[in-house]
Image 1: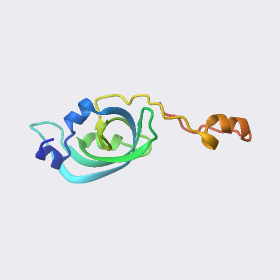
Image 2: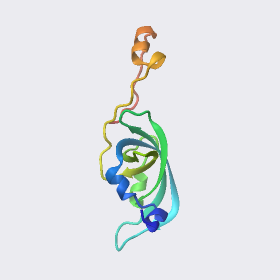
Image 3: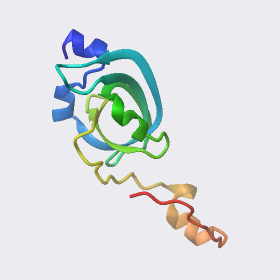
Image 4: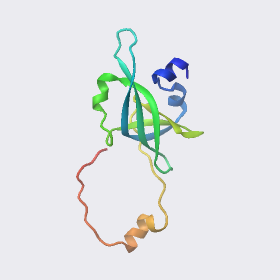
Length: 137
């Protein structure tokens, strides 16, 4: 990635092309003081995103990335509920980039074992009722 892109929060194009696809929930968004406008395009603000990342077959983990997005779209981000597509470096899963142009993929997490598994809880747990107060695809 070029120095200008790195300083201003430009997305890592190679990572967006070759990274492992995953699902990210934006848990925190911090605005930086850096903005970029090319020609008459939208003003883009560099932001630091903290994400809960889920990759196929792996336990969810937290990662951060610095990336630009149009200022006009920042208000649409709702920390804790905004889900995005992410791409993770296969050699260093902590390096991620948000792929704003793709839909978040469906991922499967590994099955739990022992007393945390669904089979164990269903066999030995106490019956309970739950109320779903919010749902998101």
